Image 1: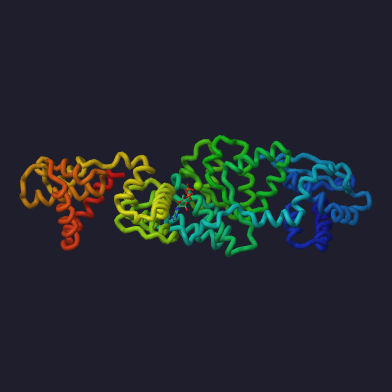
Image 2 (image 1 turned 180 degrees about the vertical axis):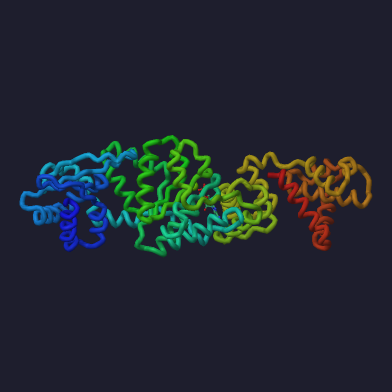
Length: 466
Ligand code: ADP
Ligand code: MG
C-alpha cells in the first residue's frame, strides 16, 4: 500500500524536476509505511532530509496531497550517518509543510546554492599545475604506478584501479604523481570535479566541521566530488573519528563510481592504527609502489631539471651528483637548485671541484664519503693486488695499473687534494697523480675492456660512497 502510494507520488514528482535531480534525491528514498494518512519515507542521511525539505518541500507536499488526500502528511525516517553499522533509523516528524523545521539549520547550506561558491568549489581542486605527467620521469622504480595512474587519468572511476593507492618513501614522487593524475583528468574531463586534499587537512576540516556543527556540510562537500585524492593516509593513524567519516565518504563515492586515489608512505598491510575495514577497502583496487630511483633515472631527472632551467653542466658533474645523492628525488632537486643558484650567481661554470664543494655543504651524509683506504681495497681486490703493493715502489705493470685506477677513483670520490692522494700511495708526489689520472683517462678512451672494468669498479665503489 505505502509502496504503491509512494510510486504514484514519484510519478508526479518526476514530471516536475530534472531527471538528474530526480535520480539523486528521490530514487534513494524508501517508503516505509502509511498510517493514518501519514506516509513515512526513509532517507539516507540527515543532510538528505534537509535538502529535500529545503528544495522540494512544495513538490512533495503537492504529491502527497494529491495521492493521499488533503490531510496527507509526510514523515521522514533518517538513517543515521554516524558511521555505526547498525543504521538505526530515527524519526523526524514533519508535517506536510515546513513547520517543525528549524530554518536556522538551513542557512549553513545556503552557500551550496550560491553559484559563485559552487563555481569555486568546482574549479578549486587544490592542484599544483606544475605537477604533470610531462615532467614526471618514468623509471623502473615508478613504472607501474605511473602507467596505472595514466590509465586512471583517462578513465576515472571506470578502470578496476579504484581505489588507486600509491605508496612509497618520502620524496619519491607520490604527490607529484597523483596531482598529475588530477591535472590530467581536469584536462580530459573538464566537467568532473577533482579534489585533492592532504590527510592532515582533511582531518582538520573534519574537526572544524564538528566544532562548528557543520558536519553535514562537510560530508556533502566530499560526496559531491568526482575524483577524490587523499594524500598521505598514514596520517589518519589512530584518528578513529576521521577514519569513520572517511570510510563513509569512501563507500559513497565508490558506490557511485567515483574515483578515489590515495597515497601512503607504506603498503596497506603495514598501515597500523587504521581500521581493518578501511584497509581492506584500500586493497579493492590497485596498489602500486614507488621505489628509490636508480642511477639512470637520477641522471634523467637532473638532465630534465637543468634543461628546464637552461643550464649547462658537464656530464661528469651530472654523474657525480647522481652518484652522490641517492636518497630521494626531493633531495636531488634541492642539490640541483643549489648548483643552479651557484652557477648563476657567481657566473662560474660548475665543474666537478665546485660541485663537490657545494654538495659537501648541503648534503650531510656526503661527509662520510668513501675513503682512500676503501678505494684501495676495492680496486686491489678487483685486480688481485695487495694494498701494500699499491703503496710500494714496485713498477710491475699490473700493480701500476691498479695503483693508477685507485688514484683515479680517489680523485673522483674523495675530497683529497692531489698532494694528499699522492701521500696515501706511498708518499708519491702530485705530478705522479696527475700522470696517473691522465693514463687512466687515455686507457678509458682507447681500451674498451679497461673501460668496462672502470664501470664495474664504479658500481662497487658507489655502493659504499653513498
Ligand atoms: P612524495 O609525495 O612521495 O614525498 P613528491 O611528489 O613531493 O614526493 O616529490 C618530491 C619532488 O620530486 C617533487 O618536486 C617532484 O616534482 C619531484 N619528483 C618526484 N618524482 C619525480 C619524477 N619521476 N620525475 C620528476 N620529478 C619528480
Ligand atoms: Mg607527498
